[in-house]
Length: 101
Image 1 (cartoon, one colour):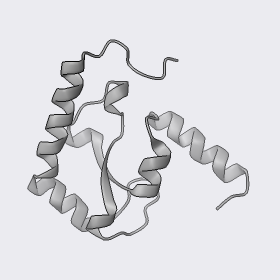
Image 2: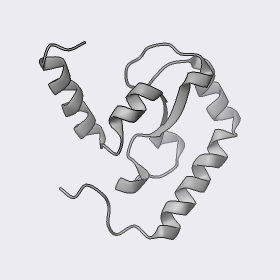
Image 3: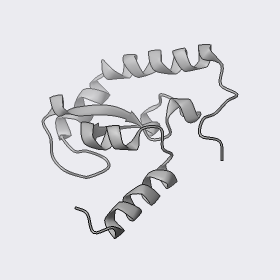
């Protein structure tokens, strides 16, 4: 499996990042932040502690749509990086199986 979607044009990436910035200013995003939950670890955070994450990263062909964007704590977002959902689940399962918290 290729780590990134190599057929993406730079203009497509820029467009998706622009759309993400627009969504950050939307009432929809503000409501998601107000819930205060990280999509990945399900812990509660203040809105300022949450970040926007693309479930399928832009670099892997993901789009900046409401169905592909979730709130994530900085720890989860930094750990997830450019992983696809199945890769992230494998990472979490392997991490849990090592006996770490």
